[in-house]
Length: 254
Image 1 (cartoon, one colour):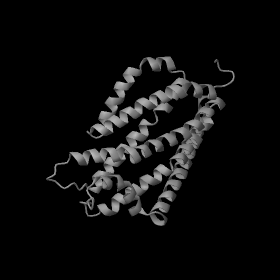
Image 2: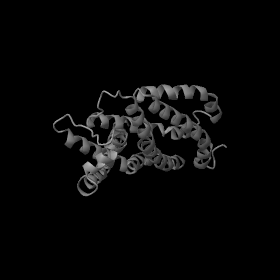
Image 3: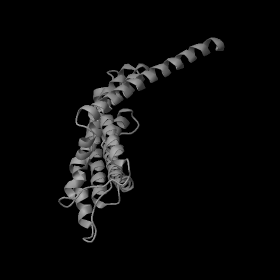
Image 4: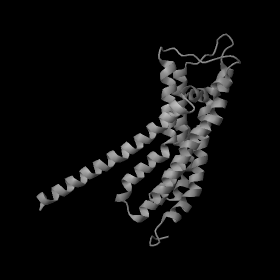
């Protein structure tokens, strides 16, 4: 009996690996296609970098520019940024492939959770990155430039700048997922909204601790990230009951 079951288990495992490979290939093809469009068609890697660098350039004195220390840095940094932009633009498709891979193993009522989570997660992550770029960067770079002594010339290295931008955008994008995490915890009956409200003060402290860890050691960025996490936690508390009702099966207890 056991010998007859092992081939079936092995075939199922192999079929899952084939399906996983298919999903990974589909995701990779789309990401690379978007990368090629951004790199070779429009707008080009130089324009992508100029767009990302604009908040820093606006904070520098008139006529100032950034510098590239490495020999191949002017080539590699814009290419890396273009790839990251392609990955961000392809995020909904990538998350959809993840959903398509796990969906066959879910119940019908569980599948109803995945589609809104994929859409909301993509939108919130992009919203967090956009908030960081359009609002936070301007305030942070102005603050940093205002603190620079008059005896020095501020000329940031483009590679260090990109690392800073990536860290900040990922931190804000991830922090904007807080409502999704809260809604999922409530929907899966792991915790109640009342309990989450009761621990609000601990969450606020935790938000400031996380902000101090993941952001550079400047007050504005830490304050913006911690405040955003606290506000989004409150949004999650408001959305969680509605999300639970909208995705609950008719036969589930109210």
